Amino acid sequence: MMNAQAGILQPIPSQGRHLFFSLAQAAALPAALSHLAALVDGDGVVVALGPAAVAALGASVPGLRDMPDLSRADVVVPLSPAALWCWLRGSDRGDLVNLTRRLEQAVSPALHLSHTVEVFCHGQGPNGHGRDLTGYEDGTENPQDEAAEAAALVQGAGAGLDGASFVAVQQWQHDFEAFDALGEVAQDQAVGRRRRDNEELDDAPPSAHVKRTAQESFVPEAFVLRRSMPWALGRQAGLMFVAFGGSLDAFEAQMRRMVGHEDGILDAIFQFSKPLNGAYFWCPPLRDGRLDLRQLGL
Image 1 (cartoon, rainbow, N blue to C red):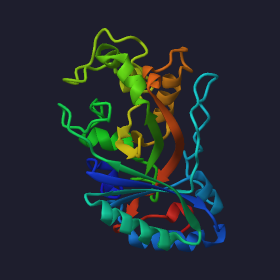
Image 2 (image 1 turned 90 degrees about the vertical axis):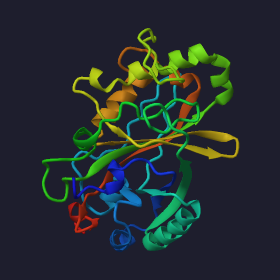
Image 3 (image 1 turned 135 degrees about the vertical axis):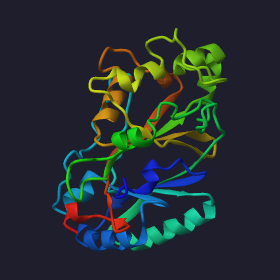
């Protein structure tokens, strides 16, 4: 779709950066977003607004909401709402650092950069997708071409909304010692695929991640477009999970099942990985190659 931010539908880059901004001065927000719209084109930087920023403008976006607390007694799913999220995409880490500085300057003093996560592409699996740091190919079940647009983008909602997308962002941290302790067979059973060839296991248990999140098994079907990438900082590392959708419903249905709210079965990846934070955002469409902010009154 021509008026979608191009980076949503493009393959993941070799290098990336996730920027999370908090709201500092609401009165300065309209000017900050106008500066931002002039600086980005949705390709090298994918931009999305959180519910707090939309509310601060006195506007509304149908379907945008805060991520719900899906924690249960033995599983914590942390929430970390932000006013603005920018996904920087490129091949040179230094260029991304410099771009970060320009974006910070553009949105100041309205928005404050509160959290940054460096991400990267790792390896290549049998189906051509990058790998998680555990070695498993990520994004195998992603829809392609027109199906990707149907899953990721808003359509039929009207000017200022068509071509937009909703996005769920979660930073997951892996416990590699716990993962190694499982052994190869149990690792494959937990994921639901063989690491060596990415083949889905017919005999995987109901807790296997592949079975928990099988997009066609939901009613209605819960297809999303994943653009996740590994992250690492010192000895800590994991996966920056990113899922684009025409609504937030598909991701939320998958996450509810992963935590066991449907049937009490916890997704097996919680044996070795946990979310550190999470938030929902709205990615505005483009108009004449710039962010289309008319839904926000800008």
